Length: 335
Length: 244
Image 1 (cartoon, helix red, strand yellow):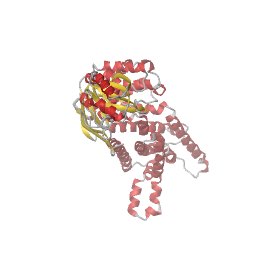
Image 2 (cartoon, rainbow over the protein chains, first blue to last red):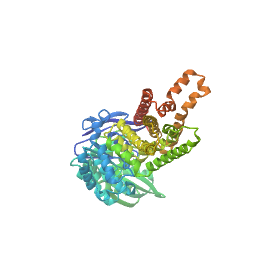
Image 3 (spheres, one colour):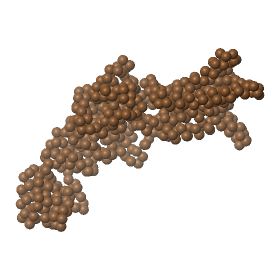
Image 4 (cartoon, rainbow over the protein chains, first blue to last red):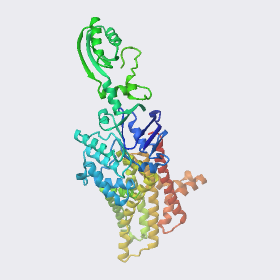
């Protein structure tokens, strides 16, 4: 449906997007995930045809976004980060204008506007001035605008920002519902949100794609990593070396000094079997264990880990998570 | 394109903006009209409507930047330009739609003045209609250029207030191009003089206001408007393609 090839965007000397490639398949919801300033909005602006790319191509429904812009843009409904609404207009009037702008036939304008308002539950607000609406409602009006003209592709840039929890659930349900007729790319910096609605996810940071994978793989990689939180008395280097030497320990991190010769740290384990060995190894080396508990690597931790790592694209999330680059100044600390 | 034109036109009438400007314009026009009429007894000046138009343009030209200042600046500030440029509407149509909307408002303002000649004719005055129509045409054509320039500034500067202030300066410049051409400095360079004189709009407007229609002047105003509009289209494209 949408193909992005080697997309690059320079802003003066800064490169916001560095040669990224991915695709949005028919009737799928693709999550576009990254921290703030990762290049998400720039990429979405380019796909929507608002900004031209410095290099690379975007093909929407077989039409190139720069060479065949008019046809390509007809296939796109775009909700930018800030909903593009006119404060002096009324909701219904604004939506009618947008429908006209998108070249919807005169006879179809009212039915489409009615349908969009119903879907976003803003029919009661139709006579209200947009300037008097709350942020959540403005966001919904912007969303309704994206649905007009029944575009095949929907580009939603952080559609749930500024909504209250009930509205967030509503919008998620709407996005899942829209999947039947549209291909959707949906950006967010909140991982749990993406995992709630998307099948596939593209993780981007500093203008580069770090991973492109399905949510199942993402979740599988989460459960595969078990975290052991420890508080141990003893010498820092000794403790870290002992734990590292145990079979099945992938990384040791978050090392903090709690008190004199008392350290808190987290060990990432392949499975729970290594826990016993760590205990035995520590005790036999006369390091007193003060506290010990098991935790699963949370989605947020996976995301943080992925985005804090530099470097090119991995074939899957699992590969990425398996990599534990060693910091030169401390061979044991993976962070 | 019609949808955008309609929205632009409506945007002038959502707020009292266009009404206040029209009222200001009518006020200025009426004051100069009344003062011209009251001078009739002194018989030093022959009253014609064309003269009134000629004088009034000097006030009116300063209203135009206020009319055009928001055209692109507000879209940029409000983040709504994303909506326009990601819609299946080419940039030239966006510029044209906005231009036509402002021209329509401008025509409304001009139309309010027609009350005076009609009233004069109805109460037994002698109105030379062909000359008057010619004056209206000149007024309209010069206005087109000013609107195009005002829009260009709004799109270049991206801030309504600064666009308006710059607009006033440019309008002032356009007005005094004629005086500048006649100055000693320019006069001493015959070639420069002929160029500046050729571009002087006031000189061309005089012909219109005296009821003299020259094809040359018509083409001058229309082509200058087109050039400025194309400049605007190119500058928008350039801004999108270069880094922000």
